[in-house]
Amino acid sequence: MIEPGERGTVAWAAACFFLLLCSWYTIRPVREAMGLTGGVRDLKWLYVATMTAMFIVNPISSGSSSRDCRDASSCRACTCSSP
Image (tube, rainbow, N blue to C red; front, side, top):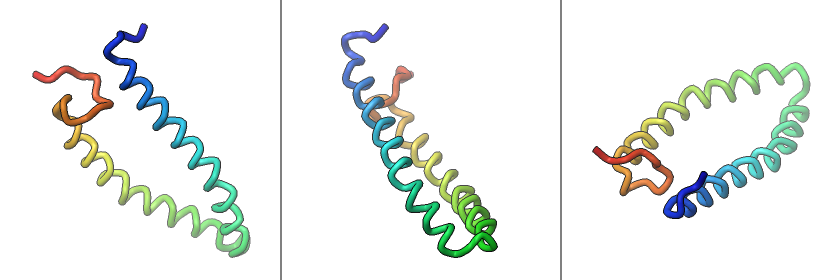
């Protein structure tokens, strides 16, 4: 059950999730068209480049998110209580 004080946080999280899915379904056809333009032979290198980029970007993104959300007052989406 959603508490009255948490409605803004839940709405913010739902909006972020909705926008994430919209961006995924918008970018996916463009990505596939770009992959097919290079030919099937180059498709494996596109996947390798994507995986490499995610291995680089993911720790940076995770580190900045965890650093920003340690204090509940600095992050709207944090549900944990501050010590």
